[in-house]
Amino acid sequence: MRSHHVERDGDVVAVRVLIVDDHGPFRLWAGKVLRAGGMDVVGEAETGAGAVELAVELRPDVVLLDVRLPDLDGFAVCRRLDEAGIAVVLCSSRDYGERAAGTPALGFLPKERLSAGELRRLLG
Image (tube, rainbow, N blue to C red; front, side, top):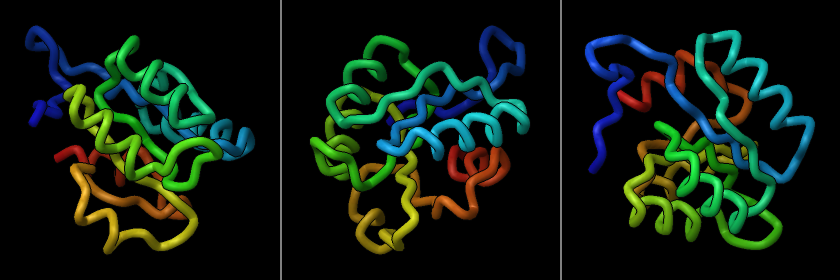
């Protein structure tokens, strides 16, 4: 599994996050919350296919991935991203915590608890 440090060349840098959710208002809100917490939102996607494509291109430190997407199941996207060596934190307004535990995701974060601190906690 990839390292989830936020250091590069001895310097502490912002965690680079790709937000994947099919609801634009949530992506906007999540981006504001994470940026306010010192994270670097490097991109957004609204579909599973878009998530895989952007994640491979941008190589974020973590993908904040909604479980319910219009084209692909978030769990399937999580497995694809893990195969590409990209860390994932699953996120939903529904409780998928138990099901998420059986995936390669670093963890599950309910949308209402999203914060830079919670995301950093899951990154270890």
